[in-house]
Image (cartoon, rainbow, N blue to C red; front, side):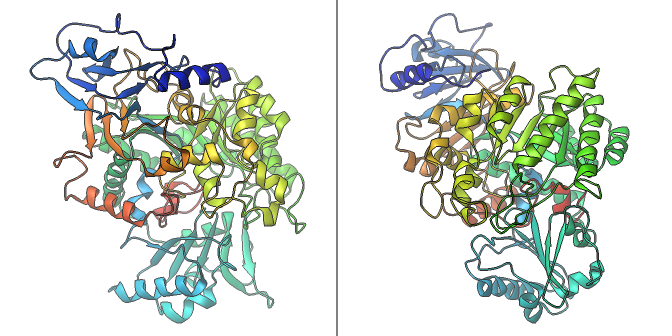
Length: 625
């Protein structure tokens, strides 16, 4: 499926301004079957989001599938006495949003009393949050969790010496906005056995002061040292977080997600929720590969696909590999040319040397491919991306089970142009994060330089090379707000102002495609979801207003008025009895998450699963991927 051409984009633009085009969905030959529809959606502009960029006026649903899409008059003929009529009120109707990299069970676990937001402008403000959390905690010695500090914004990372005066006997663990760094206090370091003599795992960093003592700042795999002693949340708490997070997703029109890097225990919770009829979002899960091939083989040997669960609701699609860190102030992404200060990051898989690590990376990917698994690999630095793509092509060439696995690079911040061409040739996709680039803006120029900062998240280059590109929030790194992502992809504006890399901007329709049709391809599901064509599942998002015609700066302020999953209305902002408007815990947690979000919804939430950190680690289990 190629990206939108300029001619197609012009045709689609003409359609949205009232000019007749050949791509408009015909009103005839769209109804299927007999009897009235269960649901019709009228009075809206329907974006079919197929390759022809067709538009329509209305659609009809029966038995969870779209049976008609076309003119309002044709669709109204399918309305009976019991047909539910959903009025789009002149808004835009498009396929349910598919956030293709999102950590679901973390969303509500990021809220008090589980975790506290520490995205502050000063270290003193962060310390005040910890002080208040300690005062609000009745259990002596209870862990204080927090998330969101940003050393691209702060003058420096917070340290144990900042936390100790206000934390008392409470161990404190504060994860940064990206989940690639954690700050802990002295109590937590003592429980984890971290001393001046502790050796960091491969790719990890234990920051130390001038006297060689650990400061409490742990980066990449070194975070495992303390995560191993953080108490895990119970399966019941995880299940409740799934429901709360799902309510939040429905409010944003999201009907499908990819949950990357989960463990078998989290998968079991999801399967139980699905079997009980409580799972109300489509999940494609990637199992955590771990830092070595031996561990992945053990996981795959223990893996049993959930029985009695519709794979259109819950499906294990492959494995998630963790390649390197991030090219921000953390400086843990592995680059061909070092950061401005001469340092460099590294791979985060096992190995005593970079050569051993590259070899281990290849073994991990080979083990997944031999098992017939799709692989999504976190890779942000250009050197890591090159190593990953080479490993993909080598493993696929050797495997007897190499047909159409659709591997992809996750994030791909600094993917070289030549590598993008190789990816297109081998049908390797790219999963990028426009909302994270919006959050970072040009703040990484101080560590990468202006040229690499501008290139970061190379949407335009990837699409022009022919790479299939999907977009995702990586929630809870940023809020799961695709409208912010579309705004960021189109404008390349940073949350604190300024435009970085305008040459990497893409059109609005291209951005929308990266949240709908292309993620369906990534999920091997393009035959049944991702567009609003007849026969597809009735997953629908309705946005108030003219989604294609509104000024880009107004996109983040648009409201999702309704969400439909499999023909059932799961969110209706206009109805007092909306499934997400009641006083239940899921709605309450979702409302709290909305209240916590700001800056167009791009701010981080509390301690959850990752800029590629799996949700298992956020629930207190050790980091293994």
